[in-house]
Length: 104
Image 1 (spheres, rainbow, N blue to C red):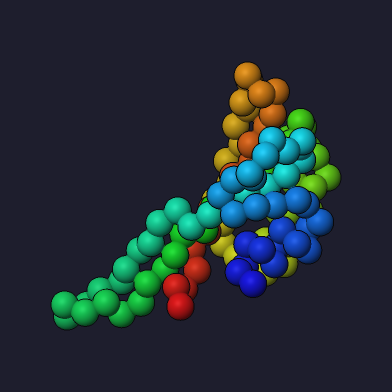
Image 2 (cartoon, rainbow, N blue to C red):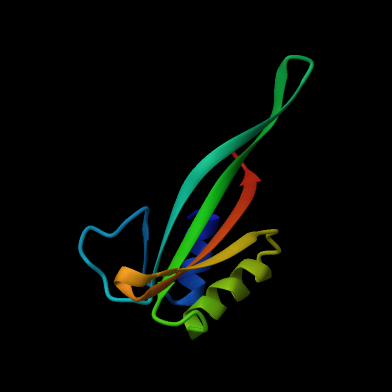
């Protein structure tokens, strides 16, 4: 189980990797690996960090499941970036959490 799966499962929100196969009613979340950073020295890769993104979709930016997801991220002691967008044509808020973790 990935850190994102553990966070979303504990928060009690419906989630899928990258996208749902069918239209899903909010609130829900998707997560995906959105990049990688390599730390190098002396022409060698010392460590790689994978960027994980969790997007939570809800009708309100104060939805209790958004708060639950954020609480679980904090409980994992993860340093994260957060942004909030409103998707006008879907009448939904998208709260995006991005963080790096060691790539194993």
